Image 1 (tube, helix red, strand yellow):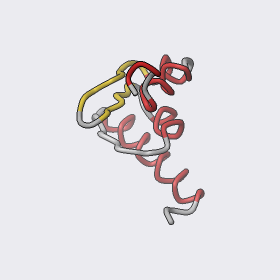
Image 2 (cartoon, one colour; image 1 turned 180 degrees about the vertical axis):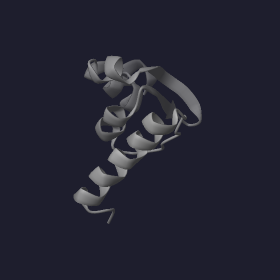
Image 3 (cartoon, one colour; image 1 turned 60 degrees about the vertical axis):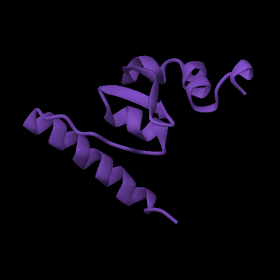
Image 4 (spheres, one colour; image 1 turned 60 degrees about the horizontal axis):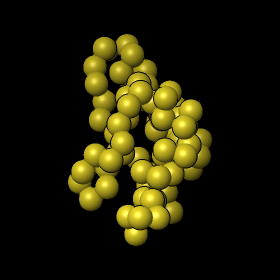
Length: 78
C-alpha cells in the first residue's frame, strides 16, 4: 500500500535536511524517480545490479527521454 503522500513528502524533506545540515551523503533507494531526483544532487539508475544511467539529478530531470530509456530499455535491447 505504501506511505501516505504527506508522510512521503515529510520524509523526503527530512532526508534532504540531514544531507544538507550535516554535509553527509545519503543513499536512497526509491521507486518514485521524480521524488528521488528532487531530493538528490546525484543519481544512479540500476538495472539488474548494473548502473545504466548516472549523473546530476537536475540533468536527469531535464531529460525524461533518457530516464525512460534507462528504465524501460530501447527497442534493440528487448
